[in-house]
Amino acid sequence: MKARIHVFLKEGVLDPQGKAVASALKTLGFGEVESVRQGKFFDIETGPVPSAEVESRLDDYCKKLLANPIIEKYRVEVLEP
Image 1: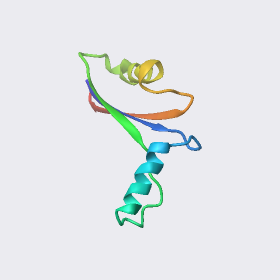
Image 2: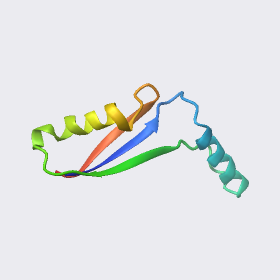
Image 3: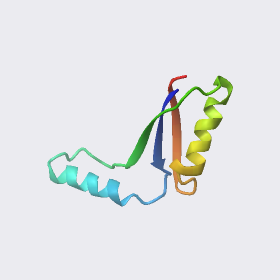
């Protein structure tokens, strides 16, 4: 199985890195930039996983390690079952 997991800060959580990037883009002449939110993604490859378990397995990866559910949200994208 191949999957991509996108992790990003929840709305309302301060994002100093995103603010710094937005400020830098404006300084470089990109005045149209209003805001930037920073995030991360993980490309994961595994051995065979029963198709009925794929979503719950990926959800477990996120809840137990990849995302902090207090301040982050995540989106799972299965690339190859």
